[in-house]
Length: 307
Image 1 (tube, rainbow, N blue to C red):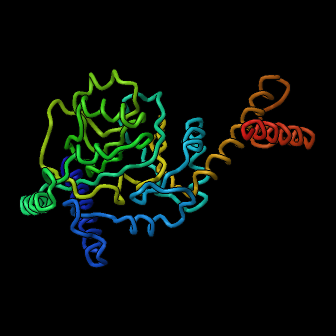
Image 2: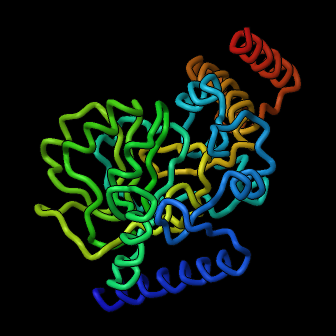
Image 3: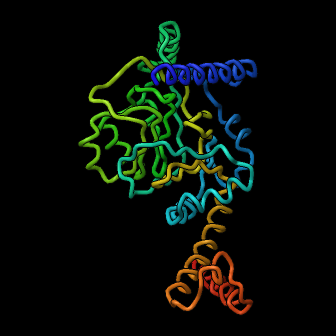
C-alpha cells in the first residue's frame, strides 16, 4: 500500500509539473504574488468562457446565491444525471472522511494547489514575495484571507498525509464562508473541529502538523482525486461524496433535479395507497391516466417552486 501511494503521488506530481511547463510556455504565469502557477483574470475568463453569470473581480465565476440555495435540496444522484449526460464524467470523487456526514456542502470553489516542497523553489518564491513587498511566500493563510462568503476552499494536497489546517483555521473558514472545506490531504485537531457546525471533507487526520509542502497556485485548475476542479465551480457534497459542477450547468442541474424530485414524490404517494404493484408505477406509470396525473403533479410542483 505505501509503495502504491508513493507511485500515485509521484504520478500526480509529474502531472502538475506538466501543467506548469505548459503554462510557462504560453506565458500564463506572470511573476506576481510569488506563485509557481497563477491564472490571471484573463486566463480565468478564457478557461471558463461558458460561464453565464457575473464574475468576481479576479475573474472567478459567481453563480447566484439563489441557485446555491436550491442546490442544497439535491442529492448526489440528482446532480450526476445531468453532468454525465453532458459528458462531464470527471467531476466526482467519493473516497472521503467527513466531519459531519449529515451536513451538505454547497458553495463556490476557491482552489489551492500544493506540491511537495523543494528548497530552490521555496527560496525563489520567498525572494519574489520580498521584492513585491509581501511578508513571505504563499501559505495556507495567504489563501484563507482571500475567502468570501459562500466560498468553499478546495485544497489539492495530492492525496498525501500533509496537513492543511487545524481547528482554529477551520473555525475561521466556517465564520468567513458559512460553508466548509475539501482537503485532499490531512487535517489535525479533529476532535475539537468536529464540534463546529460546518461541513468538511478530508482524506485523514493527524495529531500533529506537518511540513514538506508548498503552495504552488491559488485559484488555478486542480485535481481532487478523480475530479478536475475549476475556480468558481459549484461544490456539492453529501454522504455519497463531492461533485464539482461547472457554472454553465448549474441551472440545468437544479431544474432537472427538481423535476425528478417531484416525480419521486408522486411515486411514493402512489406506493402509500397500497393499490399498485411497483411495476405499475415505477419507473413510469403503465396506465396512461396515471401518467397524465403524474405529469400534472410534476408541473404543479415546479410552478410552486418557481413562484
